[in-house]
Length: 323
Ligand code: GLV
Ligand code: GLV
Image (cartoon, rainbow, N blue to C red):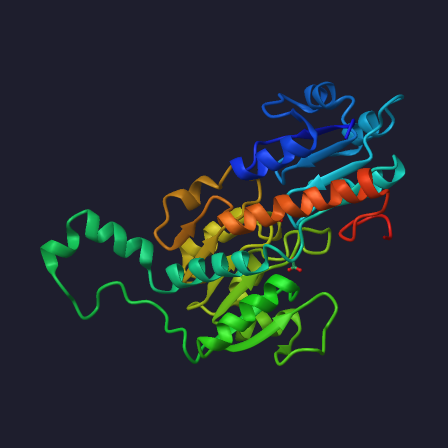
């Protein structure tokens, strides 16, 4: 196909091979700022973007209004699209797609990895063993005691695909599942509760919501004080949902027991206080990071590109135009 596809970061080798075989691929990686991105991407009619790229009004306007070859399609290699000004994209005629569905199970697994590591102090145990502490003291009845999962209550903030997949896992672990969702849904076996109730009743809270004006800073010191002092907070949604400084303070003061984070308020920067704390497990945004899922995400982008440029149709996962 004669159009140019820009890509802001190299994907898996197997995915790159498919892309290069099908399309005329231009590497946009390593751009310095918005102007540099605009310069590098000029003439691309399709772009695959990462969640770490900001496609704001300025970038979309420059690329979407290009005279000869305006940008037509922006495929975000993520399910979350808070890095894209979708309203501006629509204004400049750019279709935006994401990668829903294929990363649901991998991301729910990541939530559980964090949940279990935080509940059972996996990170501290690892450090104790490697530092020689265990060899010195041997088994102790009170060493690194954590929280029991079976019989506990998990509260899911954001009951979409990922939240539902976390709920399924939790039920299999013998946990009672409650949730809070923007629109209460009545289609599942779990109990919808209001936000206050979720904070008060949950032994574990897992955030699976996207970043929106409504979810931004929903978790601040007030909310941490309302939670149980034995509670664990996990975030696989978006960092902005938590006021990170407040979380550090809450962990320091013992308002909650522990936290497990995959996403950060100012990603990839991390609140320095958190870096030195024992009761928080930190991952580098690995939610969807399995080989299978990252390959499936690439295939969804390829499907979207082929819909637009080979078939002349709107992709089924288009967020701003109806297929
Ligand atoms: C990852 O955070 C995604 O939105 O896909
Ligand atoms: C994301 O895919 C969600 O709906 O949770």
